[in-house]
Image: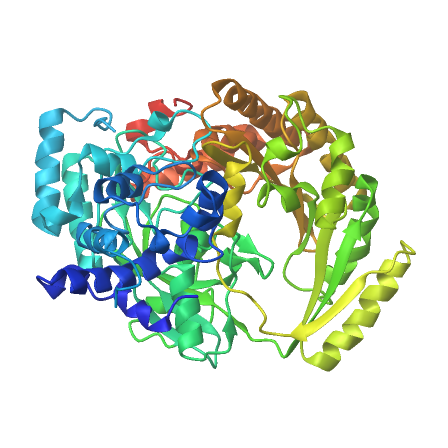
Length: 113
Length: 513
């Protein structure tokens, strides 16, 4: 389910990579999402299942959502929601949370690369 | 979460201590905002989250930084609670026993230091998760197997230190040597690692003289910075006998049938059997089955069994190893089972490396009552004896019914003992139900104590209650544990109250929530 190369993320501090364009930030966010969130929030994950139960299948996969807002994501991550535990700054540092937020809120659509 | 200070520490003194921690770690890794404190609460708490509220968290990235943190904590008398990744769900998550304790979050110590295929071990730092180790083994095509608990989100080291287990067995029994920091900051390696050039550290458990590894497991005497853990060689083949028993009373014969097979090593690991309900709690909501406030009635059970094609009891007898040995052992297993039942069971042959890997899927069960939920387990250890196991099940189920909760029991048989994990699910926002959970839990402790069974691991809120049930010679073991605690940790800074062991400085907190 997760690319093995993503293991590198556990030893490379993402914050050290410096200022990035929105596209670079979102790409970094995609990697962080896969490593830190994907086990629950990709296909077959427990978060995906519970979201499908709560909001419907069309809103169950976060990576396909177009209605997510940065403040909402931040609040859910740090304060938890429903059965999702809170995620600390050690597990998901602010710089990674910013990247994940950029990734999940980036414009999506047929024209996107 | 607002700041709750450690007992006996003033706000000014606490602020000075946090400033000193920041000089050691950098400001970024002293986590002490209200939001930070929130992230260390027990999301699945069976009581009030505030009963186990951290005052903040510290996140060192090296052994030297942990040593420096210990120095400051001793100077300012700040209690610390080490966590590996903080996923000890059902037992307190990332929270401390004593409110006002500062979490020592070791998640940034996350190196896989070595994996040795030939001799079957790994050396890990505490922040390495099951997903990390799994990826490493697969990426490097290393044919070793790791024991994976139901919730695979957590730390491999943290789980072993809690005596977590999986069908492969008790993970703490695979520990073979540690690097630890004593509360006073001294670095020690246990077993053969006590030699400066020790070559057999991850290979031979005991070294010379007393063995310390199991003193550290479930204790509060040291911080583990490296752990050597044995991994099992990948099996050539696996055969599974799919067991479904239709009547609740069949647990007795089944236990009698499998126990000698496990004792003789025909079956290895833990032989697991679980009640029907575990099939329903993950994929469905309780409201699909029953709306009442009391326990789910017996009339619903056949409906669940039919929908999920399960028995009242369900298990898998797993044979793994060389394929010809598995086939020979299978004949032994089927012959033995045939002495107790005419029922035939499905036999599934497969490769030895068919594990799907870690998953967080079972956490879904916390949604059983619909809204925010939680789970705890009451898990006493008892003799592997069919009659006693059957009685334990019936007594426990009656208690669930008495307090209006849904029975969900699993028995793990290692040939000598059986660990009976009783899962208790609840709605987190239903105060009345949570009060019934508390009463059930205390009744189960009392029942088991009367039988001479004790729990192997428990939630923060019940640590004192369970420790009190180990009562030989007026609790002489607890007194010994606390004598050792006071000798090793004179300021009582490390995990006060963990598993009922309170240092002198905080002993008055025993029993308080």
